[in-house]
Picture (cartoon, rainbow, N blue to C red):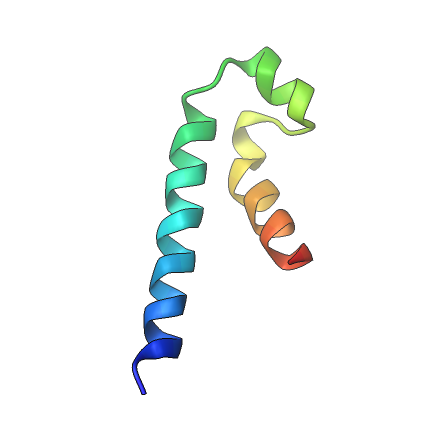
Amino acid sequence: MFEPLLRKFVDWRLRRTTIRKLHSLDDRLLADLGTQRDEIARFVASIDSCH
């Protein structure tokens, strides 16, 4: 019963951790990854929707 809820929480926490780590990167490294600082959340969401 709680497995889908737990899975959603784990996925949300992973997205937030990823966004926080990307925000700590230098702008040049973000450009190498194909994103910009103001588009990090969208970038993570687009990667998440691919899986």
